Image 1 (cartoon, rainbow, N blue to C red):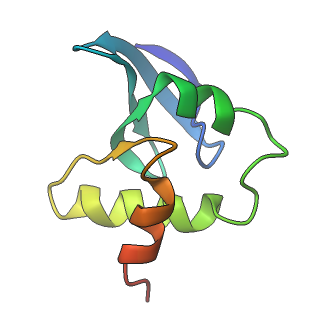
Image 2: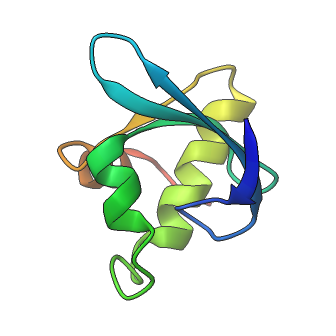
Length: 89
């Protein structure tokens, strides 16, 4: 695990790299909680100009799942679905 910034919310995070049939990172973020993020999604979300309008919502979705004992895997194919299927306060 290396200390860096969360690709979703830009807070302090520990990021690890795992290969389990595909490339993905394990993230432990102070704000979001713990989650997996695929390599292409990680690269896409580390671009500050991308996804500005959904980062805070996705962060909240990840935290909500983490608080419920779930560990989400975020990908370019599913992040919008995660946002749309989560009821926010």
